[in-house]
Image 1 (tube, helix red, strand yellow):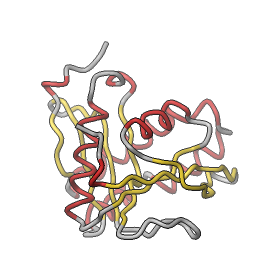
Image 2 (cartoon, helix red, strand yellow):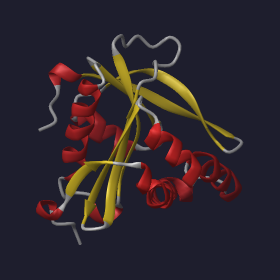
Image 3 (cartoon, one colour):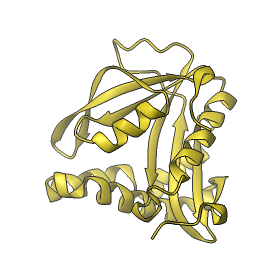
Image 4 (cartoon, one colour):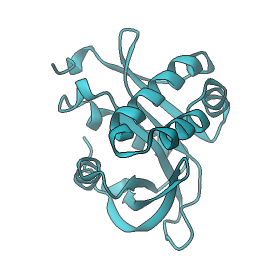
Length: 182
């Protein structure tokens, strides 16, 4: 069942959201990648990346914008945009990173991802960026297709560790002035 897009709001996260965001971020990451990763590696990654303390620090950081999509008090997606230079060898001047972008499976196909992406791009512009870059697992064709449709182009790769497993992410960059996001 798809979420009714008209009932969903997108807001900037606050420190008070740290506990909820930690649980939701871990849930959506595990839902997306759990079947393709060793359980111990997944556990190690979730513990390091999505704890309440980590989320609280990110929510307080002026160089990170966390957007939360929700229906009532129920989170359905989130995005994090941060000031962070692209990986070595990737040319993306005046850019920020789309560090995280997750939508609850029940909201796939509802239009929420496009709304959340538009909000992420607006936040990137507010941070003074002209471009936005991200890393996406090379074994995630659905996400790669979504990002390409939104105007991202593949410019290289970087490594991403899930526990002890070194994986390869494709690095995609988009020009914020050429957005195809509504």
